[in-house]
Amino acid sequence: MVTAGAVRALALADFRERRRRPGYLAVLLGTLGLGLLAAPVGDSRWQVFQVSDHLGRYTSGYVGTVTALGGAVWLSLAGFGITRGTVARDERTGVGQVLAATPLSRLAYLAGKFLSNLLVLGSMLLALAGTALAVQLLKGDSDDVDVVRLLLPYVLITLPLLAAVAGCAVLFDTVPGLRDGPGMLLWSVLWLTSVLGAQASRGYDLLGMRLITASIRSVIAASGYPAETVEFGVGLTADNRVRGSFDWPGLGPGEAGGLLGHAGLTAAVAVALALTGAAWFHRFDRAASPVRRPARQAGSPGCPASPGSPASPGAPASGPTASGPAAFDLDPARMTPAETAPSRAGGTLLAATAGELRVLVQGRRLWWAGTLGLALLAAVTRPDGPTHAVLPFAMLWPVLLWSRMGHRTDGGSVGELLAACPAPARRLLAGLLAGVVLALAVAAVPIARLLAAGQLRAVAAALAGVLLVPALALLCGTVTRGPRLFQSLYPMLWYGMVNHLAGLDFLGVDPDRGPAPAAVAATAAALALGALALEAIRESTR
Image (cartoon, rainbow, N blue to C red; front, side, top):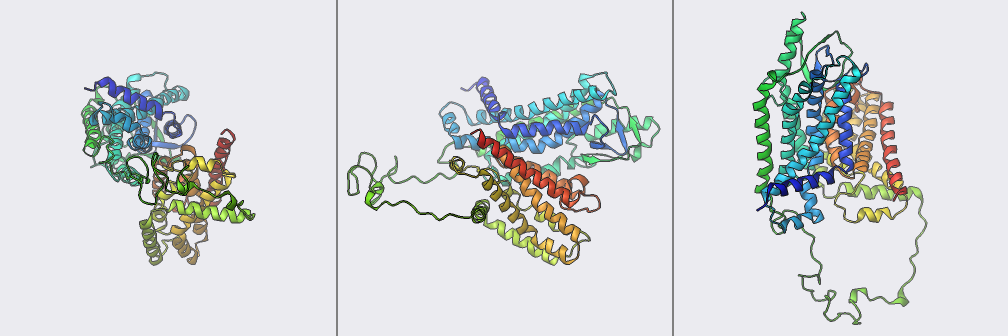
C-alpha cells in the first residue's frame, strides 16, 4: 500500500526538477514584473486593477489585493503552460516505466503530479506576495503592515484558482489529444471565457470581484464621490486621467468570510479534475497508451529477423562473410572520398530556410486548408478603415507552428547532431526566416487589400507585426527549449491587441494609439538578436 509519504516524495522530486528549468525562471520573472506593474513604486500609470479614474493608497490590503488579482490572471495562463506535460515527459524519458514497476497506483501518481503543479504555482505566488510587501514599504504610503489583510486575497482568491489550474494541467496531460498545442489553445479559450469573463456582472465570480468592488464602492461613497459611476476591471492598461484616490484597508477576516465557501468549492473541483484523469491514464502501459511506439527493427529482441534482413546476434550471418551482418560489408577498393562543391552562403541560408519551413509545417495538412480559408475570407472582405478585420485572426492561426521555433521538441538526438554543425547563428536565422514566411502566408491577402486601399501606414504596421511575432517565438523557444512559453505569452499579447491596448497593438489595429511600425520592427530586431546572442553564449560554453 502506498502511503501519503510516497505521494509527497514524488511531488517534491518533481518540483525540484522543474524549478531548475528555464521556463520556470521566465514565468517567475514575469510574475515579479507583473507585481511591479500592478502596484508601481514610481509615477507609472500602468494598472492591473482599474477603479475608473481613482488610485488606491498603498495599504497592505490594497497592495495585496491588486497583486493577487494580477497573479490570478497571469499565472492561470502562463502557469498552466509550464505545469502541463509532466506525464508525457515521464513516459518519454522512461521514468514512467520505472514508476510502473512500483506499487504506486494511478490515483497516487496523479495526486503527486497535482501537488507538484501546486508547488510550482504556489512558489511563484509566494514570491509575488513578497514583492507586494516590498512595494508597500518602498512606496511609503502606509508603514503599517497588516500581514492578514496582505495575504488573505492570495489565500482565498488566487491560490484556489491556481489549484484548479494545477488540476486541469494533470487532466490535460492524460486526455488523448490535449497534451500538445491543441490543449494549450483550448485552455486559452477557457481562460478568456472564465478568468476574464469572471468580471461580468452575471458570470461566476471566480475572482471574488463582487465582494471587493462592493467594499471599495462603500469607501469611495463615504468620501462624497458618486460611487455608482465607478467602474472596475482587471487587465493591464495605462490611464493618465487619475482624479482622485481612496484609502481602502482591504478585506478583513470578517469581510472575507464570504470567500471561504468559494475557495473550498474551487479546491474540491481542482482535486476532482486531477483525479478524473485516471479514467484515461493507463499507468504507462505501452499496450494501452495512445502514444505510438516506433516500429522495431528486424532482428531486434522480440522481433524475428525477416528473410534478407541482418541476422540477429547468435544467428548465422546472411551475407558473404560470417564476421558480421551483410548490410555492413564494405569493399574498401570501391570506397572513394566524397567530392562536394563549395556552396555560397546565400544558397546555404536559402536551403536551410526551406528545411526549417518543412520542419514547421510537417504533418500539418489541415493548417494549409485553414490558411486558404482565411485568404478567401480576406479577399472578399473590404478593409475596415485603416485596418483589415481578418488580419488579427490570420496572425493567430499559425501559433502552434511558431511555437516550434528555436528548439527541437521530441527530436531525439537531433539537437546533439545539430550542435556538432557549424554556424548556429545561421540555423537560427533560417528558422526566423521560416517563421516570417509562415506569417506572410497568412497575412499576404489582408496586406494586399490594405495596399490596394491606399492604407500605407497600415501596411507598414502589418509588415512590422509579421517580423515581430516570429522573432518573439524564436526567443521564447531559445530561452526555454520548448513551445509552452510562447503558447502562453502570445495569446495574452494578441488579446491585448484586439482589445485596443495601445502598448500591445503590434499590428496597428488602432493606428492612432498603437506604436509606430518602426518601433515594432526595432523590437523584432532586438528579440531576434537576443535569441542569437543566447545561442552564441550556449555554443561558447558547450
